[in-house]
Amino acid sequence: MPASRLTGSRIREQRLINGVRQADLARAAGISASYLNLIEHNRRRIGGKLLANLARELGVETSGLAEGAETVLLDQLSTAAATARQAEVELARTDEFAGRFRGWAGLVVEQHDRITELEARIAALSDRMTHDPLLARSLHDVISSVTSIRSTSSILVNGEDLDSDWQRRFHSNLYDDSVRLAESSQSLVDYLEQSQDAGGAAITPLEDLEAYLEEVGFAFPILEQGGVVADVMAEPGVPQSEAVRVMLVTYLARYKQDARALPLSELRTDESPGVTAARLNLPFALVLRRRAAAGGTVGMVRCDGSGALTLHKQIAGFAMPRLGAACALWPIFEALSRPMVPVRKTVDVPGTTRQQFVCHAIAEPKFTGDFDAPQVLEAVMLIEPAQEDANATPIGTSCRICPREPCPARRETSILR
Amino acid sequence: MGRRVLLIEDEPNIIEAISFILSRDGWTVHTHSDGETAAARVRKDMPEVLILDVMLPGRSGFDILRELREDKVTNALPIMMLTARGQTKDRELAEKLGVTAFMTKPFSNKDVLSKVRALADA
Image (cartoon, rainbow over all chains, first blue to last red; front, side, top):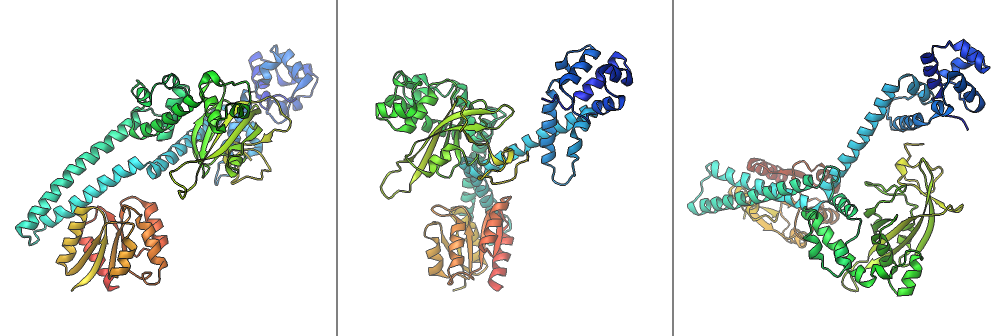
């Protein structure tokens, strides 16, 4: 297996430290000086016996020359290059660039990471403006009050020929609107302050909720022991933002129902969730949720009928997109297309180290009140580490950062192509 | 009876202020606050100009605009939409749906008046 593509730079560096001439080292290693020159400038790959010979002559361990830290740098540079919109990037000379200008290469990667982070933040803020009903309501109240005050005060100030009744009426309106403006402004400030207090990283109510659930391990001993939702909500550390609290109360109410139906003492994590559901005559989705609450190395995602992810319980190695759509090949979406049919699949996730997971998923309708009510589906998928399976289904995280080609479900070009 | 304008808006004090300035200009102002029944009210009144807010209880101004533009009776009606300042997406959507003019909140009375006059005379 060839060693790191930047091994040449390491050889040159070590030779200069040792004060050895290129020609002397080349002779000692049994190669020509011109060939060593190409190696040192990362224009020839090197590995095996020749690398061992050079390492011996330089008095260092082979691994010291061949370590793969720069591979990460090269991959990061390639990723940054893939996002270039206009600049023609000399991809074929990435090795040389990273080898000769390590500091600049590091800066390119750092700035690319920063841009990616800022873009994600802007997207999340934009999403919040569009979808956060509390924020939209607060802003609407402020704008409506200001509009009314401006219009009314303009009538009063411009000396329209107003009789005393109209004057009284407009003065009264002005007072009402100023009170309303004060209240709506305060409520907006409170809302924004709560969001800031909740932590810098989380910028949507869902992220706030998930950060809290992560902190408590997605488990609520109070509810397991028969306590009520209000007991949990009164606990220290519970998010203060109103938008998050509304979501949390809904989450806890279902958690309590689940805990009552399936106490952890009756849950066997060594058997298939399907077997548990059949043994105890319980809904499959409930068993999946309880498995996620039971702890251990378990991830979970939930989505609504549109495929939007509404909850993420992270598991190492199975990346879940924060924003935008997930890979359409995830088993949860197969479950969504076949409500009430359990789906079990072993999946293969791309990454620096390939990992496999077994996923159990099901989509169930949510009861919304009456026979003629619109059908609302919710799907849940449990994710657990799997044994190596040659027939695992290849999936990704989301198209933009997925290297798999060809892919029948690809929506857009990958930056890793 | 003067020229007729229908104002679909749910904020009482905004309704009062706009009604006042238009009435002083000789307009007969009808008002309606419910999104759900707004389109029916437009067909019934058939005003010369319609002022339509975006955020209404029951139904959004965009839905009402879409319905009115799909109806041959109202598809040429001059419609001025009230949108919040900075909501570029709202403006883009309204333009796509066939709005005639915009007024961004908070607006000046003078601008409302001149725009309504211009729409009626166009």
